[in-house]
Length: 201
Image (cartoon, rainbow, N blue to C red):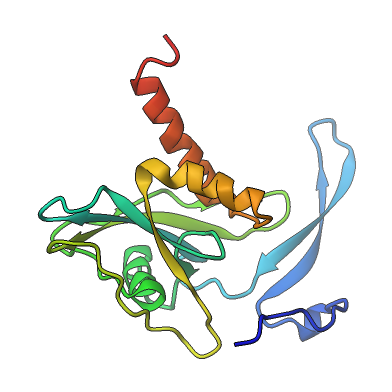
């Protein structure tokens, strides 16, 4: 299969855009001075008020055959996607996890959702929720087949949670760009381990 490549780039007019638009914002600051700001907006937000979800899947074994792990997309981000009309963030997360990775959430464990958060509020109004789901496997680690949409080319990778920060730093050294949200989670997880071990007395 040939590698994907960018063929060309060109400016995008709002009237030609399907998913986003540019907006100029006029406002006054705390000193009463008139200022301008430029922002990008999603045009796909549905009635839930939530644009999308990222899914942190905790993979575990009933027999403890492998350490606690998670699944990431080899574009170096968590599984993620937009919330459909009439869909909750939790339902979207369960759906996207199965579509992109093949893993199915353990429905005996309630998904945990973050508040609505933003990634780059100075640039865009796009928001999301992080949804944590449990994936319980009978024994050894399995790698199910994803259910990808036409045009999706996704490679999944299972990483032990204890090794996630190290793995992402290795990707960076290879020239890959890692999603900030995944990087921040991995760094926070590693920092929590250091703190619990007494690294900052």
